Image (tube, rainbow, N blue to C red; front, side, top):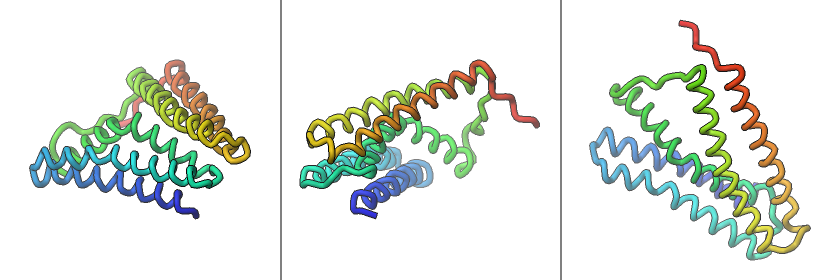
Length: 180
């Protein structure tokens, strides 16, 4: 595994560590501002990953799927970051602090709408990450060195299409309520 792959893994671990630190600081130690500081560190990790990836490519590395994953990670983290933090926040409050409402399993049209919202977030992630992939392809300006970036962009577009088809299917065949 190459250096960039390890950086991506470290950034993903770091993402969840700063979220956990933010939630623990916020709710267990009752330090709201310090908790917010930790939660706000997530984009710093994304920026670090982007700088390391761009530097690697600038220094002559041939782009790989791992470089493409850095752009995807960045897009997904920016587009879904707030909702992932909210998701973790709700569960931490309910399951750890024994406060708040129990997280609800959505069904029917509520689930279909939630799924479509996720698909729209996925579009935003694609726009952000795809823009970074396009910039890297343009910046390197060598089709042989960037073919894996372009391949990943096409694969991601296919996955985005499948995501939309699934979201639309929930409007046609709504997710049933869970049996009690």
